[in-house]
Length: 117
Image (cartoon, rainbow, N blue to C red):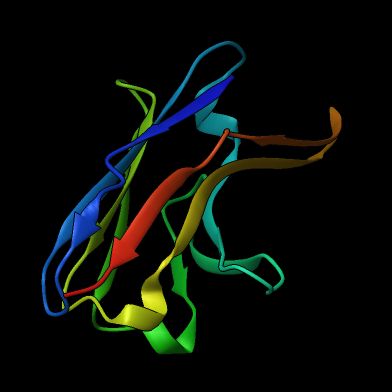
């Protein structure tokens, strides 16, 4: 189970930190991702951190967003800075595993981020 928190209304240029807490399973074996879905648009990958700690970002958030994970606390965070109105979306946490144990994807319920003055 994944539970996101931290979504809020924030002004353009502001910052926000999203957190996702996982329960059940072996958290450390999953690649963890943040996706977002804006109204009328498809869900898109924003940032990912592999089980080995490698990170990747969508082009439009590079330099503004930072993803991190804590396998002991079983959390993955998304620090967002210099927010823009186009960052407005529901943000979803995703846990992905593909390997000898099979293929698994788990999703949180989402947290709303609204960037507006």
